[in-house]
Length: 225
Image (cartoon, rainbow, N blue to C red):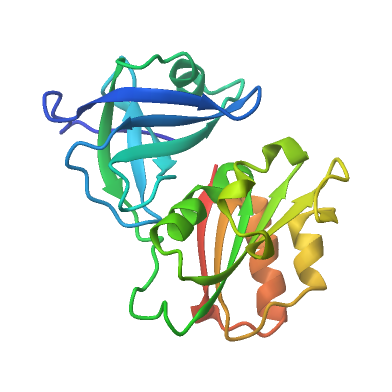
C-alpha cells in the first residue's frame, strides 16, 4: 500500500542501507541506519528508493533499543519496491518517513497480562519487535505460513513461545491454517490478542475469538494488504 507525501523533506529523510539479509528466495531483511528515528514496537515506517514521493509502509522488525532499523520484506510479482529493495547494496541511500501507527503495547499492562500474537507471513514483523523490545513478555506467538521455509528467524523466539502452522507442508507444529488451529486451542478470555497479517485471516480469527467469548476490548489487529 503506497502513500504519497507532498510534505516530504528530502535532506532530512534519507538513510543508508547497512545490509540485505536473505531468508529464502523471496523474503529478506532490509537493515538501515536508524539516525534519530524514535519508535514504539509495533509501529511502521514508510520507505522508498529513487522516487521520494512514492513510499510503501513496512512494520518495523527491529527492537526499540537496537542502534539500527530493520524491516521484513517479501518480494511479490506486482511489488516494484520489494524488487528494488532486494537489489540494494550496503551504502545505497533510501528515503523514509515516519514512524506511524498505534498497533503498540500498553507498557503499564505488560507485567500482569498474557498475550497471544497471531500472524500470517510477514505479519510477524511487529511481534518480532515486541519480543525483542520486551523479552519479559508472557506470550504465545502463533505463526501461519504456507511452507516451513517462511518461519522467519524462528530461532529468535523461545521454543515454548513460538508455534508454527503450515498449510502446504508438514514441517510445522500443526498442519493447516492458523485459524483451524485456534478454533480448537483456546488461549483464554483474559488474554490480549494481537492479530497481524492478511485480511482474511484477521476477519476469520476475529470472529473465532469473539465466538469463544473473548471481549472485543482484548482484540487488536493490523491488516496487511
